[in-house]
Length: 93
Image (cartoon, rainbow, N blue to C red; front, side, top):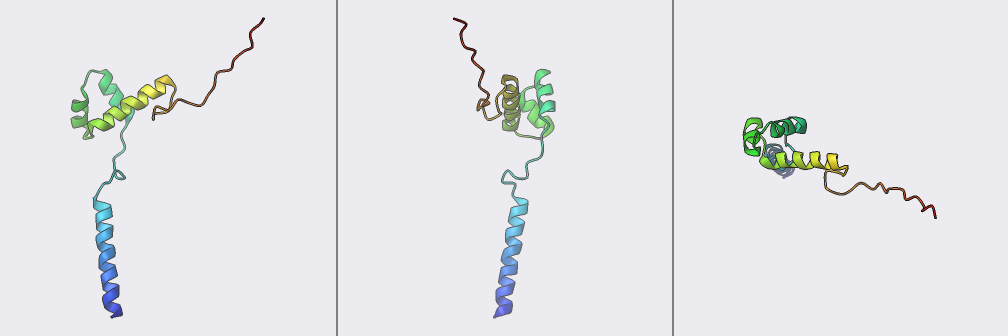
């Protein structure tokens, strides 16, 4: 009985391990160099062309665009403004 239970759990673990390692689920996404993506966009390539050439999704390209725009604006890539508050000088009168 114990050997049957052990075999069952070993088999279940093997199946779970296989499923976790073969399905991406977003965790196994390859790293994308957004500088390269932005360089291609500036040079006139479309998001679809870049996606095909770099074998990435167009949503990844749009994410690089958002991150770049946020950097230029001085906000975080999620679009949430930074928490710096400008100092206000008292009026001279």
